[in-house]
Image (cartoon, rainbow, N blue to C red; front, side):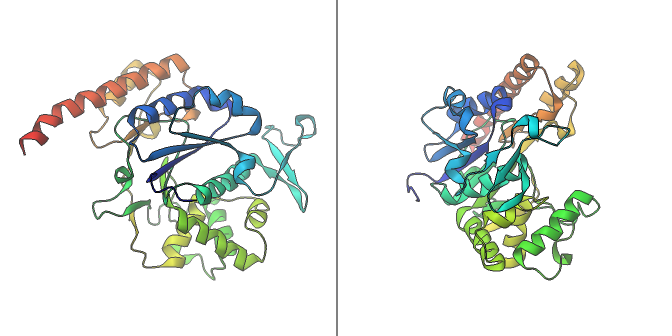
Length: 315
């Protein structure tokens, strides 16, 4: 149900393994979030007590079972056939195992349609905000909520190709040509709750099943692609989300964070327009080094904002 006092919901799916990263994210939300911002955090039921220790007044802590309308049962590790021991789940009526990362995508949609605000921003655990966060932070100059979108850049990736075909199937689109290669995936992705609900309504109409069932049965799926294709290719001519490829965050995708020289350059490269920083979890950076780097990036943002402030006052 909509809460008129909430203008933006940040949504973070996480788990015990990412807790040290999440702690920094949560502290940054507490520090920088405006009064209309809430942070919905989704974790496995067994991790609720741990994550509760890092919550604050803006946090809405829920379990995956709170946002997915049915319960999935984790397959015991000893019976898990995957060599990587990725989590697998079973649900009566779906007779193939459901991978944990597919279940997380269901949780994102489930959280989106139950969020207390129309505007939503997905934020991974390895992100930290360094500047004030409001609904306006995620809008383009025309005043509309942004939609991260890159045209025709990923069509050569086999994983993306599978996502396009599965998206077309779920949405009953006769061709993948209009969106072949389009990318909607990033660290800070914004949705509208009503469009997320409409995406799921379309899936139910096409498949004749509850939305979670065909999605869970998918062997590969991209929730951001599914939503993005619906908004840009099914709705068509939308005027309440503006496509943009501008990044709101400073990310280690494009930097070296494993050497002193690289980290110094990464700090220096932080732009005054960046809302957040992202040190990808796959960097496997020692937590003390990571936190020192994040402290330096926050200090750099404060320094930049102090320099800019007199200019704004003088205008």
